[in-house]
Image 1 (cartoon, rainbow, N blue to C red):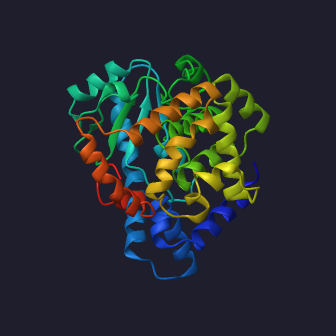
Image 2 (cartoon, rainbow, N blue to C red):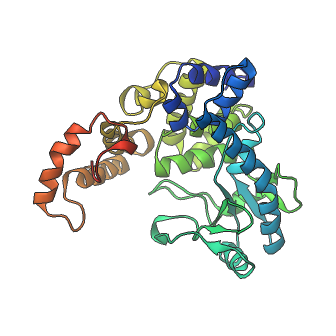
Image 3 (cartoon, rainbow, N blue to C red):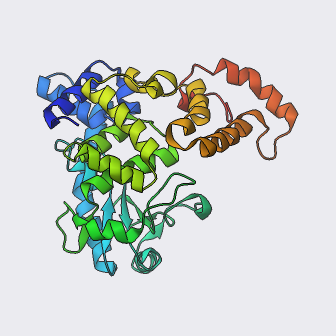
Length: 334
């Protein structure tokens, strides 16, 4: 990937051409605020709020991680959040939680609970890779303790020992806190996105681009293949090249991720399209067919506890809402 100046120029061009709603949907508010301030232009309140949230997260994360380090034993690896924010301009990236990866995750989680942290909500642990999120009352950032990396279904996650062996000191600057090596971190974030919402926001892709830009492309390809992410990484890299570096627009951005170059929210129809088609860009053919079949069953069959009558009555609403932003659809299941 190219030099940082070219990357930031590409990001700036996308921000400058985007409506405010698109900037916010793609989590680029703090960067947009900085650009307007630099230009001496008025700052809309939604962007000022994003800027304040980014500043608060940056200031709060150090104290929170210091407390976690005091209460935990053994190596603790900081993922995403403050580690990636350090690669942005000052207060250029907001985050609402701190993710840590630890060999003794259950012990760390229990220690935090025993020393004043509180559970934020309940989760279905069969569907999540981290324990119940926690919050220290003094800091309004959630803490997610991970026992293993978040990985796309059907692909074995890399050994934690491999990540720990290559880990480097965290940018937070606290003794005993580590961060993944840049190559590892780039792939960890790509895998994380692919498990939840592949090619969802420009900020997700920018995180990966910043981590990967100084790393040898051939080595990233080799590591992606070794970790079972060859297709995931290829799709992610091609999207980054097209969006930020002026490369050719790949099929994914022309078919099921058209909201990215347009800098807008996904529509309801595009969300359904993404769920059905993205497996063919990330998995081997057999796995892709299985994932697509599962997505089609979810779309076409009644939801659990729902009869066919209710399902059929929802169809006109789904058609009506097809072009609406996904988060603004008028009802569940649209």
